[in-house]
Image 1 (cartoon, rainbow, N blue to C red):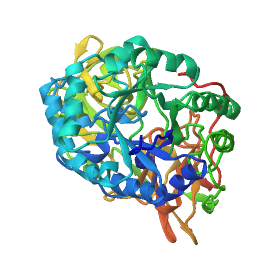
Image 2 (tube, one colour):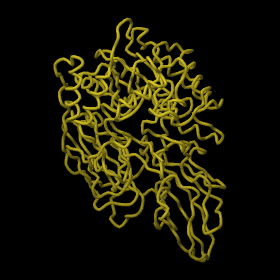
Image 3 (cartoon, rainbow, N blue to C red):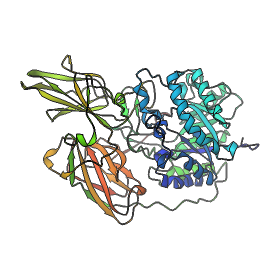
Image 4 (tube, rainbow, N blue to C red):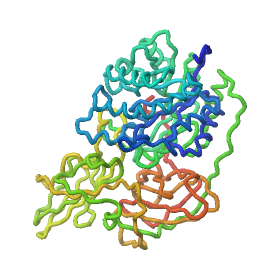
Length: 580
């Protein structure tokens, strides 16, 4: 009910933190044009409190502006501010600095955890309460926790979060969302709080199960998975538009409400992609296209039209009024003329820390990026295997600066072995944090080397550690590129000039693995194993005239040049999403 008026919620998810602010209105206008009356968004704690006590609500983190734009367009808003959000987002939205406390317990009634949540809510919730519908704003509902029943059953924790919202003035509809399974609903539901269900297909079965636990209440699918996300090394997921439309028709004909997860996916810019761990660790790609109604770069898809046609059977979507298409441009080849080796640039990026053991990055105050461990081995020593206990997530091994191989968390078959000459050798291990796990029982996911390093059976001590968050590359000094320097981690710099900024796509063909920056903005990771072959560059990140591109490449390239083209490349296969 909105006041005294019943409403069938037709909502779509758009994450403000995955879209540049200049495009928020465009994406929200497209949501409204499709016939939706509501937008839903998560709130990622780590995006707003990246370092403890340091809060960010500007730029892409300006959640209030996003909600206000939605209200201006006549849309209602559902906000999901639970400390944990999943969302294929780094650490499920939890801040990495929580892991600096080795005794921290997550997502339960653990005082140390709840104290941190309270500190965060004391800042976040007062920003949202003026925007509640009860105060004349567009927010009609807020979530207590996210799919908690698939993780735990701590009812005291859920009750605490409920009261945390109420005590801070949240007086709109509160809800939970869980999968439509017995154990999930039993673990995730809260007394006197509306329960919703998440699923991708078979709505009649899902709603029947939800009704078993919550009879005589409105039905809602809080996450209708009409697409799916991608992991590195797998193909891009797609789902048939007609199938998506038919399942929606079933839900609306049952008088149920629905929230599309996603309506528009956006991008995991920077180091904010998450990872999953079912049988093994699987990091999520930079693109969060999700194969949904509006593509990563804002294009209307076949699903948009199929869904709008179904909505028109139940509500008047009005005339199709779309904003002007956003321009895309090919800017041609960018020659990467500057070159700076990582090992020669350490003093410009980091101050060394001496440590007995190779500590994980959280113990050194680091959240994201890379971390370098170095130690000296005496010699001579016969060839032995280097054992990392445990690497999280991918390590490049160097002996006296010479690349010896890679050790990967998910690939137990990859090993590195070497001998040590009589004069000894320096062993260096460059570890990449490829994204903390965002879902399931292995959520607690410190990064770097978590226990120790052995050469053969002997543990190695006395380490020099460089933290490499790579959030400021301005002090780097470049020289002309030398093609003989492959297999050395290095920064490559190039410039290009444009007449007018427009959306474009960075084609990384010929490069191996690394991170790309445009005008100091971290676009995210690239990797030759796909499925993502291009990185989306929103036009607002560019400027008229000169622009700077920097690549941190781990292994080397075929040729030091990249292409800026006017279309994305995601390798696809057609199948129903896995959760359905």
